[in-house]
Image (tube, rainbow, N blue to C red):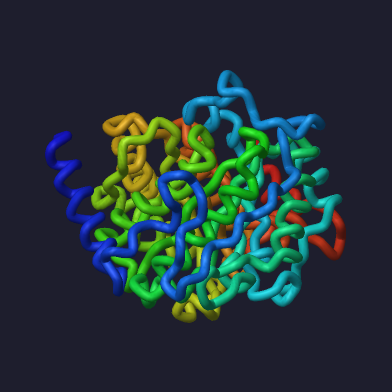
Length: 374
């Protein structure tokens, strides 16, 4: 089995490396840790520290305080996504902005973590050295700081990097440069901050190419964050069915993340961006429907047991145009199944179309909140 994994990983890495127009270019960091020259002769600028540290002294976390992935899964526990905010083309364009009281409301409701989807690619230069906009980076610092101040664990990712899904070769160097800057920025942050390499690889970023890409991306992160917990999902939209194709490098600080939107005709009922599924879909929760979901989740559970890597369900939820009585019923059922299997999870999402919180009323939608409660 080890030989098979090594062969697959070597093949994936070679295919991904072949995405470079100049195969002699190497990765983005020299052996001494200094930024290497990029394709046009520039360098990736050193990112400033975020200032989001583990304590007031600003010192890097001691090696003894770094938790294992199994411990981090318990810390992540029951979480929620700050969706449609920082992963919009610009914050606010999709009707929601992160507000500091939201983080207190999340913590007060008993959630243990937040996942913060971030569209870094819309706030970085299109040409090498792909510098991230300083104002946007500072805004991410602020949001992460608000969450950590509420004693929440935090996941930040690269979200909606649509260009790399269609052109992996053309965006390989940019993906690595983005992570070099993000990782440098947060290298001294609390261990409660975790990185997720890329949301939902799909389309031209095939599972095989993604296996190679994640090796190089993780290597960039590890140069400045050797112990930080990193989340990696399979290809094909982080689907459970693609776990069989996921090949991971040897690394003791990984969590695998999957997304769960089954059955799609129900969870995306009335969603205009999802193939115009008919609105008002009802999930009755009969024995057959429950068994179908259990069967899919068991695939993830079995994979986790076999590979000894914990599972985080990074997204799940039912859209607001589905049958209203069915939404909390489905949510409560899948949460129960996640908990039985020891999965941590992040509901999609806080206050937009799937939202458990009503921002106009300034209050939780009680039936959904109850479904998400232990």
